[in-house]
Image (cartoon, rainbow, N blue to C red):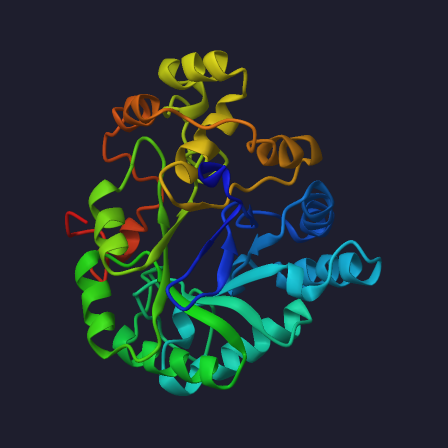
Length: 317
């Protein structure tokens, strides 16, 4: 059944599993077991990043599931991301090599520029002045992209893309790109369906990955009383209709819109439950019902960077 396909292809022909395990906020002590549990449950796509501070532990899990014969490296799809303090052309390759060493891999399947916003290089991963104000670099992400292309030519990553880029930022990269922009990883959920940006990406053959598909209820800055997607009456009604959990409805919402989705969990039962979404699909009417929850409800605003010249969220999309 085409609608229930488990992988889709980038414009370069490489295939990516539509469901992956997110690892943002997964503590180093928990993430090795989470990745092992995910691969055992059937996941073949793991989403990582240098910023998350847990790539060595993810790497330990990858090594374990390959060693015990659960999977081969070729059966896995591993994504990582270039952090903001490595945007200078000369910093990109060393940063990728650090990620590869941490993950214990010879290549990535996908390497993304994590944010368009460069930070001051050569020091702390979150550089700040004495008042706590973030310190920026003036490196243009278009230059960063050119160095990303070199990583593909060297065989260190199969595909490259971006994350948290808006339409205008994508257009600037597309003007110079010699290697396809395979992916834009952005926050997407019913409070922030991102229809306009998704349509633009589709028009340019850029696959969209949805992060925080459950609304990131465990985000460190969440406040008591903040809206919770899994508690929304419309979501709960659909969960009853399809005999699924609210989380499964929210995951299927992305897949049925043609997106990649990377829910995060370190709880074995939830990791397994989140993967049990292959025996149903949402009707177009139910997708529209979920999209009606739209309230520009972005939870990952990075508003402290709003004065950065490349802050992506001033534009409509």
